[in-house]
Image (cartoon, rainbow, N blue to C red; front, side):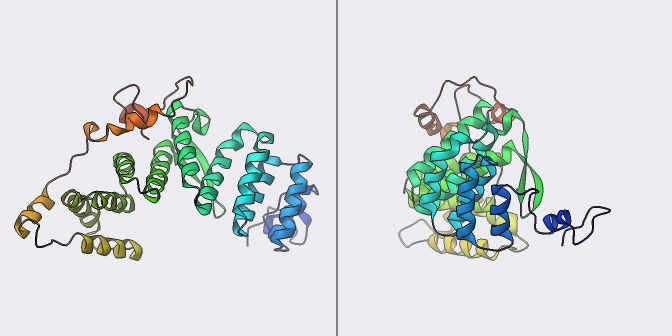
Length: 301
């Protein structure tokens, strides 16, 4: 139970709101949150969120909360339509959060092409310095706790989602390009495994072995804390088992020990991606892009 402020009685209205994480007041939005969090009636809460939006009562929060609740109720298509229809009523600060909700909804509905376009748009906003209101960090919330998110971490997260989306479209060349850039920004074992899958799909088995050993196995020499990651690695190792027609085992092991240098020449395909969706915004690039983009027009897709 959350702690109360000094002087508040446990049975006071203020204490009740704190315990149930409710906003104060008696507006349509507050009533919707009460039905959602206290009465646990999702469908009734959705109706009340609609009324809050119609009454222009905390529209930013009402629209986002309603869309998330619709997703939980397997009404993702309705949630997409609601955001697209009413986001113009929301503040500029709420648009980025609504985009994040839309990305999850597109994924749930299998609308991968739209997910890809929105992810690319978010990357372009970061490149232009429009994300985070031009700041290098933002405050996020998860399970009731606040934490700081850096531009680097957000960029890596979006690239990971974009790589996954390209994999669903079976565009393994594009997915490989995206995962390489994500690994340059913030190395991650799960993204490394996805990169290996992309390479395997393209017949680049030696390179996949090298990355798997270097970025995953060597980083987890003392054991895997994540059992799902361990199972994924075992699956990849099984796919990479030498075949009779391949080179001798010694040659394969030798190739594993080679360091796989990922440079700008290997990811030139990014230039072609960005040409399709470049927009003439005023550039206010943040430091992360100055570090990873030695050429002015090069952008992490």
